[in-house]
Length: 454
Ligand code: GLY
Ligand code: MN
Ligand code: MN
Image (cartoon, rainbow, N blue to C red; front, side, top):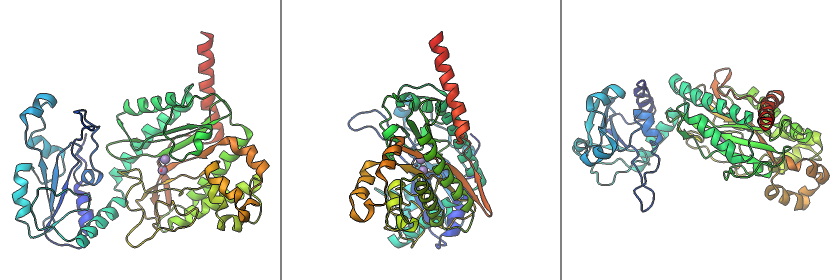
């Protein structure tokens, strides 16, 4: 892989940090073994360490000299036992050519460097066990963490390119999943992993969700093992591969059979309208709550028009009835982590109200933010039953109409967008119009029929 220009990231963090001298220290992730065994867990670098160094190997450390902006990378000392099993690690010279740092040393040189410094700042995640230094106080370390979050929130062009690549791999995998004929959620999960890995994405950004029928109503369902018995069911697939530690987070919802039922198509169309209305608000300067409120408004209009909800629109929004069908936030920051840092800048509090409680983000959008836009409508008994039972809200839902649409389970549509000064760029290419999806499902049906005939 080409050297990533991570020095820019270090400089960006320093530009947000008030301290003008001393060191910043951060350890990288170590290799873990499962419980009481020698079975290694998959290694994933800690995100901020990757941000500052581009290193995706275990047991590294980094020190930044704030005054000179000099970056020193400390590699694990050569361990003859490890070489027997894992082969020779990179030489110091190779590491110097791979990483955007000033110096590469072995970790045996690190303790003296830290203990000689006047002050050492660390983000809260750093592990300092066994190291002696003049550690900065908690308030300054928090300021460093805030500087890291602000830096990570505005993506450089090359970071956007990596997120775009993760999106391309995942969008193509979503298409393959729509085109396949599957008899179990697990078939789809397996194909998604296969398509990701063969295009260089060995990690998923999160546990993928493959939920058919009622399972689509569970927001983070991940058992992914139910049979697909009913062609009228929809399947909700929320899956995104990671590429070079950068995430994608994409949801598509499509029928098990070749066509959406009229009920599923009606709910799907409301969710697509919600997403398009949100997109129209997305540009630098828009507070994220405005985007979320837009999704709630369009959901209210759509559910009223179908006759599932009754009464005054504003009342339905204020009393949480609309939120019972759209209980989560409309999106979040995306980057090295799927729910990336920076959603709540310093001093911004959560809103404790139905519909707003689960907002993962409350920032004013800036050019360079990458966010998800993921409205949904769900028929989840656990959430809707209390609304039906409460005296003040029971009159707001038409039970016959609710029962007519309930079997749709859940629909979510999720894309990843880059915010620009006057709008946005959509990084997600997976198709989502009803006719596009039905054409892909048709491919699946034809392939299945052909196989049967052979
Ligand atoms: N896949 C998790 C989310 O959509 O936030
Ligand atoms: Mn998702
Ligand atoms: Mn998401």
